[in-house]
Amino acid sequence: MKFHLTGRKFSILVGVLLSLLLIATPFLFYLYRLAPPESSEWETVFGTIRSNGFSNVQSFIYTLFTKVILVMLTGIWFLTSNNWWKYAILVPFTMFLFQFIGVLNNEIKYVDEFDFWYSLPLIVPILLFVIYISYRISKNQNNSFELMSEVDEEIKKILSDDL
Image (cartoon, rainbow, N blue to C red; front, side):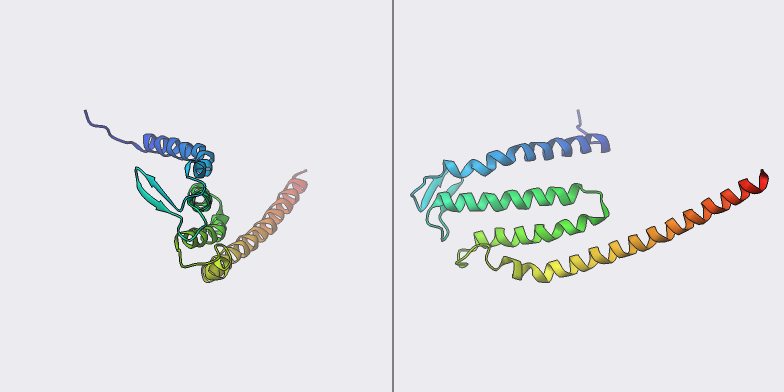
């Protein structure tokens, strides 16, 4: 027997997986409590986790999973949003992604300090794009309001002529 995903089954499966991922976020946030509080290394079944420039492994895991959760939630929000302004979500997503990379990069002395400036070249084009789209939408919306009022006036004129 073959298992074949139809469009409906696939969207239900994606919805269930996204729901499980969202439900898991509080548990992921508190995962750092499993790490030893005063150790610079932690032996796990996945391998050795080092403090990576932090004072201990617990601080590293806390900071890492905070950034992972922020990247994950804004990524899900962007992918599931149907609004025209969904590209504005890329601004915080980009900042969180740079912060996440900063946590993994042990050469950076201060996490979250300069990430905004590094992400600015990516953020500015996104902001300009969103501003341009909103300008075009508001311009078209004003034109449609003018057209609707003209249509309403014409209908009133036709109805008043018939009476």
